[in-house]
Image (cartoon, rainbow, N blue to C red):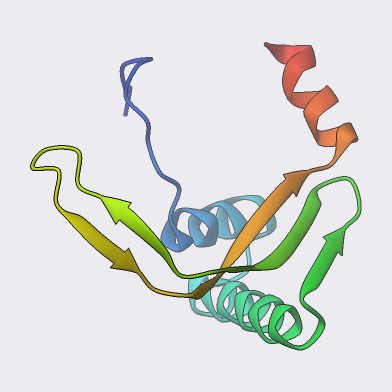
Length: 103
């Protein structure tokens, strides 16, 4: 399938499972289980440690955001945005280099 350059195609867990199946030959059921287990491990470790560093890929970090007042730009109504925790990602320099070398 060819997508236009300006259209972004999101990769899904199903796409990753298909890639594992086509490259390694591991059955899709096992590939899906591996992907789901990896994601569960990342989430649980992120909750416990607040930070996950994957060499040559990047760092996931939990950040706490305070409550604040936000404004809807269309109708100018103000709303309170609740306190929350977000996940941020900082790309490793080696990954940036690989991406920019091709581009």
